[in-house]
Image (cartoon, rainbow over all chains, first blue to last red; front, side, top):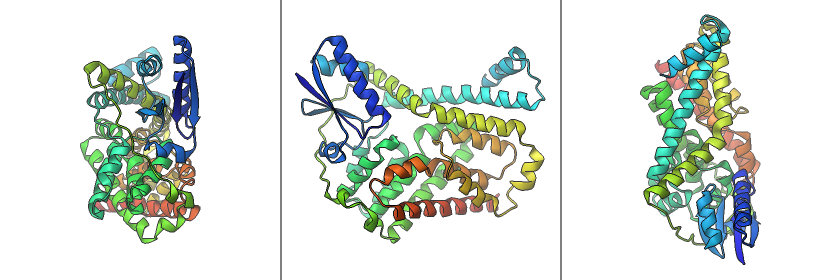
Length: 78
Length: 317
């Protein structure tokens, strides 16, 4: 199962990003483990300053802003 | 084109009289809404297509380890072209501190960033013309440069929260970028959606205030009180701008209406800067990394700087 983390201190864009990922996974019928990381120390440990960032199985795939739906699909289906 | 369209809607479809206050207000509102949103979409899309915008991570890499004057110059210039959501202020601040970038330089960046951005710059030119756009940007960059320097004098390090010094940042992994035309287009569309979603309320509110000012405030009252002869009009404008907040794009229509009625340029610029750069929400977010004395100092330094800018321009014109 894929582990996806959304990095962000809880601002609106982070919520939107998390929801995008959740819906995309449901639509694709893929089970994922979705985590919201709000702890600043942990966010910074990935080297990310512009939130929201997205981590898929430990790899940074996105930072700064809401991702495009096509991108999200790719993360889930790959 | 926008003018003709606004004429059609307000004077013909809604049948409001051209000479009435309501007519003037509605006309301003319709025309500016069209103009600003069309410009917004165009500018953001083109910037997105070129991927011209810098990420704060890149700015940090450019600025770190440079001599102070160069670091500060880079920080304000990059601050002006780096869009970041105010919710990123905390990681940004910590990231700069962790890179060993002097706090004064970080403050310069934090001042420049909300006050000037590439989107607002283009809209400034479109609505107020080259000259005023240039004045606003030059004044903003100067305030950011000097403001950060003054902050540094007060040794703000002592007000930084303890935990900030302890955070160690990881190395950011390189992100794969889809640089095909399709990838760029998708990215640009996403940028348009995101930025418009973030700013549309501020922009509409700004246009609304501008329209009311344009329609209902009598010119004689303006020329008696705000034409630049009274020394106190600038500090009052700055003080008014502190509790008010809008983003840099939202203050443009307000400035347009004020200048149209003959408010002095310095007073208008001071109000614009105060509204865009000083905001309570931003302060509350920054409170997570620095304590109140530093924030109060930050607000005071900026208020004084904007007042000086206002007086300066008023005495020149």
